[in-house]
Length: 302
Ligand SMILES: [Zn+2]
Image (cartoon, rainbow, N blue to C red; front, top):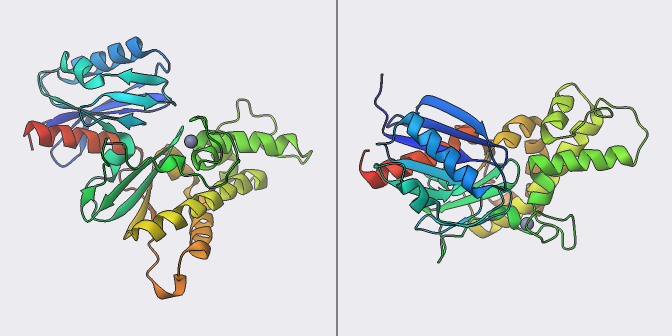
């Protein structure tokens, strides 16, 4: 059995996933809980319990959506309803192994050379690696690709603005778009009696050949492609990676629609290599593993 070098934790909009990791990023033991969204004390308590159960002498890396300072304070995380929480200091009290708190999508993007990474889940996260270096910005807040505005005055986003790609391509946005379509048509469909209508239920219906479900996902893919055209024009990455639960499930319809919309809007598409849009190999685990390995690196256990 390989030795555990760190604990990786992903704080998502709906669930907390924690695992002990081997030096190659392999998951050794995994625990899951629901995210106590909106309750910071409960969140800190639950994270402490997970660490205690997995090994309180290991370095702990936490990936969380939102604005995270280089010292590991979570300044703004609207999907988890956490504001100004010094998570590194809190978790420093439950482990002797060292703590790293990072943006989840930035953590997921680590290890690539030139990549644009988008994670599609409750929200849309992002991470950018240029020439092997994760782009952090002056405050550590770079890579919030979910809040690129693709339609001025468009759909409302949880961040308070309108028209962000998060309002079109997240799992929650896909559920909302399906509900809206159903409200404006009498056409029968597998989704008609589904309650609550989530990104997951739309994906399940798409798999069963439901036309409305597929159209909704393709529309999300179209908007994703619009955002990606701007990102690829700006950064010229070798690859675009999609992570997060909603990406893996919707990929058969999302990715072709995004590729077509991106190509149409790229500068000189016939005169360049167009980066492929692929699923991140670690899927939903990418943020957790990236954060855990970062903590191990900082602690010197790998
Ligand atoms: Zn936004």
